[in-house]
Image (cartoon, chains in turn orange, red):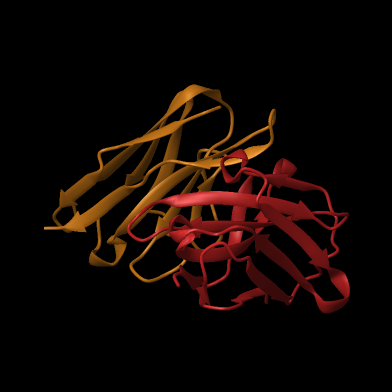
Length: 108
Length: 121
């Protein structure tokens, strides 16, 4: 089974700073998504296929990576970006959908 | 506009069966393009996939649930449902329904707002 490990667990930055979140897969994967979960809300799809922004997602969010190492970057952090960010992958054999444990982004 | 709304009892006794329904509006539940899924989030924890179903009834489940979960679709009512048997306190969580999308339904493209379920006597 594929395990997704996210780091760091918590990221505390000032507004305007660049946030870099990591997701590492235990085996090579070809497709990965990122979700944003703001306090008290349901998760929202941000990035899919590793680097494609979902509809309505601001351009300051970008995804990159391949193989086992993937990155979500927030180019200029805004107070409204306070959230937990999760990566996710679907395995084919056996069919399963797996989430990372999340990275909490805080504003200093 | 797609809307997903979870509903069901907020309190379930240990050893009983948890039953939730996701009502779908603004889209066809019988579309062959989509899978539909359930995800849960225990207090202060991350996201856990429970299972997924498509319009024809093909289902996939998280093996960690030890065959306790059953997902079904009722196209006439435009809803899909989750049954989780023999619940314990560890099943206390916010339960979300979602529509999957993308090639082979890789991703959870749209989520309901979630419903809190507490397992307690």
